[in-house]
Image 1 (cartoon, one colour):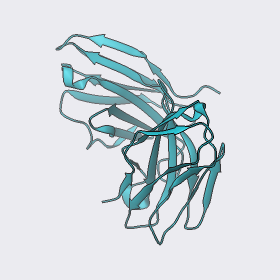
Image 2 (cartoon, rainbow over the protein chains, first blue to last red):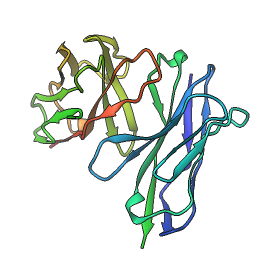
Image 3 (cartoon, each protein chain N blue to C red):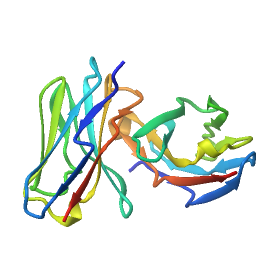
Image 4 (cartoon, each protein chain N blue to C red):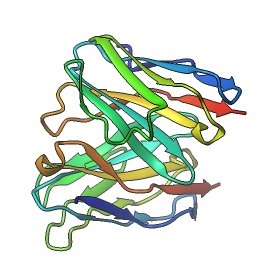
Length: 113
Length: 115
């Protein structure tokens, strides 16, 4: 079945550092890909998404490009802030999975001042 | 606009007691999802509804768990009897239509502690 694998955390960075969180997926069809973010004590919220190959999703300085050839959707940000400290979830949705969201295990990011 | 509303935000109960978690989806959304989040197992989909009808309950851990959606604006997740291993954060999410690639909107969660 469909699945998502993302890098283990926690990832600890200093403010203004470059961020990459790796995400790869396995899917039989043509999924849409998502990054959700969960701030402490809150529910998940959509950060960005991409619906087809080579699409780039972007929001709040974060970017991720849908790479079909490498089945990846890595999250990047050029300069992180303390306020970016959260847990980041990569997810996919496909017709084969009845459009349910299949989540990765989450990666905790801690940004230090 | 009000988002997904969950109540209570925190629940502490003793083993063996009945627990009911409540969710009000975003108005106009046709699909509702219940998730459980723990450190050990991460985020798990328990059940989801489309137009108030349960579509997939394969994630419900056992018969102690039940969920209902009597109308488009209300859903409950009940655990009877509760056990310490049910301690987790339970999230409700809604989406306009589960038959497409739509964003799911999550509530703030209910943190359940079973002593």
